[in-house]
Image (cartoon, rainbow, N blue to C red; front, side, top):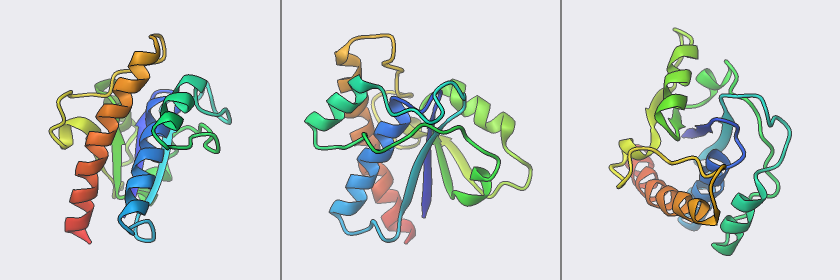
Length: 154
């Protein structure tokens, strides 16, 4: 199963989701059956590491974002990934608009798909540190549900 998390710039929410979900899969011994990546719909931060505040918040919970680098969603992603999960409605709309007709990927809104308390992962970029903690809370909840879904598929 191949999963791609997508936000706007790939420096806050989607790399956090990538790291959290990767660690969830490792903890239950599914890392050999799950491929996880992240990307952004925009190209502003391509090649840059995640936001330092996202890295610090993640590190406090045992996740390492420091090796990740931002990239933009490519047309190949719609063939390479089984599931593409958008962090918010805007990015979901962008993904659906750019989706090739021959795409094999299922595209959905991450939190809505799993019935987490929020519909979308809020963008913490312009806020304070609390926003990054909230993002982690939501992503951890969603990642646990995603793991259950994948267990049922494998």
